[in-house]
Amino acid sequence: MKWSLPNNPQQLPLVMGILNVTPDSFSDGGRFDTLDATVDEVAAMIAAGADMIDVGGESTRPGADVVSLDEEWARVVPVIEAIRSRFDVPVSIDTTKPDVMTAATDAGASMINDVNGLEAEGALKAAAFARVPVCVMHRLGTSSNMQHNPAYSNVVDEVAAYLAERVCACTLAGIAKEQIAIDPGFGFGKTLEHNLELFKALPAFTSSQPVLVGVSRKSMLGAVLGREVNERLSGSLALAALAAWMGAAIVRVHDVAQTVDAVRITCAVRDVAYNNG
Ligand code: PT1
Image (cartoon, rainbow, N blue to C red; front, side, top):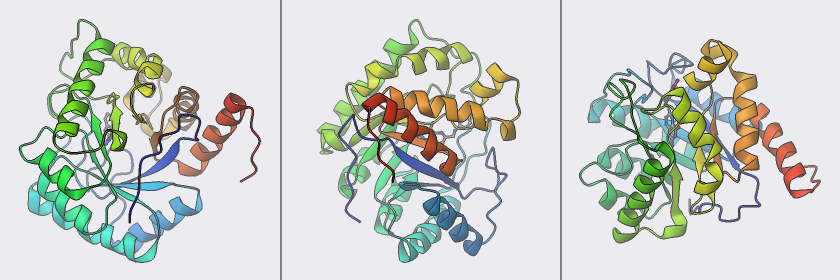
């Protein structure tokens, strides 16, 4: 599927539904044991208004297990093929591995979402060769060590400089600038204060490139609200609304139906526009 990133900051943000195909995912515990159940979940997200589906075979939450290339491949490729054969929805592949990027885009994925900023050996090349939009995210450290005392002298400046450098690396590798989304990487090697400062600074990011915001059910909500992962819907919606207000191009969420309403009413006020469907 030929698919492009939105480039109009007055547009509604796209709602990206999260599909974890991992046995150890942080908030749904890897419920999708069979391909049929996975397909049903995707159908439900599409019915709820998802604009795209983010398929991930390696959990990147703090402390998650590392997954081998073969294992990740075996998890995501059949799922992408099953989605693409049944639905006309763009799929993004959440991976840091160049071989998975290639296999996933060959199987029909329309976007590459890399929490490692396409830094792995061969990743830029694989992404450029696939000729699909990309999302490059900032993280400090790896899933296993990123929450051990993350430190910055100025978190907003450092994350912005890193993302600008990765956008430059992507364009040098042959990826069109309009096809590069950036992501500050909420919860990836950041304290609560770092996450809040970055969120407040979103307008500075959205003015340079399309921005993807992923905060759904994350521990920054738990830290402020004192709520467990399954009690973070209201907080997640408040942040999705703020991200929409500040011009995010994509919000990556678990709760698609509720988020669609939250971003639509927020953007109706922002743009003083009424559009029933
Ligand atoms: C994200 C993201 C992602 N998050 C992009 N891809 C995850 N582009 C996976 C916690 O603090 O934000 N942007 N892919 C999930 N990762 C986490 C990180 C989950 C932190 C939970 C936490 O609870």
